[in-house]
Amino acid sequence: MTTELEFLIRLGAGFVAGALIGLERQWRQRGAGLRTNALVATGATLFVLLSESFADDEVSPTRVAAQVVSGVGFLGAGVILRDGLNVRGINTAATLWCAAAVGCLAGAGLYWLALAGSGAVVVANVILRPVARRLDRRPLDEDDEVMSTYRFRAVCRHASEAHVRALMLQALGGFRLRSLHSVDLDEDRVAVDAELVVEGRDDARLEQAVSRISLEPAVTAVRWEVADQNGSSEWEGMRVGPERESER
Image 1 (cartoon, rainbow, N blue to C red):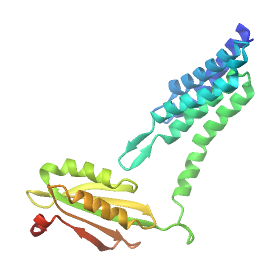
Image 2 (image 1 turned 180 degrees about the horizontal axis):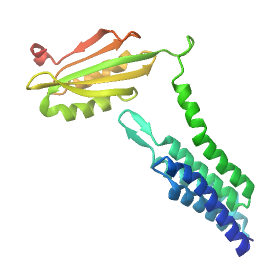
Image 3 (image 1 turned 90 degrees about the vertical axis):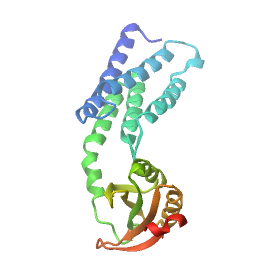
Image 4 (image 1 turned 135 degrees about the vertical axis):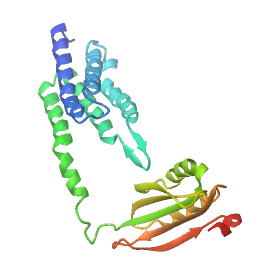
């Protein structure tokens, strides 16, 4: 059984440990900042303390901690967002998960381990951030997978531009989007151009996207190309609807 004084000390340790993690997140203006991480750690601490307030073995701290992990998993899923073809918020979700683990340590009375866990999370978010960026910018070795750059264009009528842009984002899922912009061709038509990056080659997926988008009545032409390392390109495919073939 945990005394009231021990209860308050552990609760305070969980709150402080979560706040330390949240300070770094708040400083970088992330979605889950000071309050969120402090609340997640405090909540995990309270659940573990609740289990220790009963002598019954059916309410063991380890079983409660396992349920905390599952609950925080749902909370972390709420901060992961789809931004076009990219996914954002995974690091924030992982930070919340770690904050819950730190809270469980504090609730179990392992103060130094909770403090060490908070420090490890802050170090991972602060120090490893520039390291990860440097690794992302390093030149590819010969043994690494070659990155391919695609250019995708859909020509449509002005009134359907927004719909076609949304359709392209959906049909081109799985590629990393570099740019997406529109170019007016004449008073009635607009070209929506996208530049995509993928490891290796994935021409089959581009053909599927062409087949999907070319079914839209407002689309008059769809094509894609592969750009080489020098920035030039060679047309690999062209599709238009049969009834609109004369409009190319």
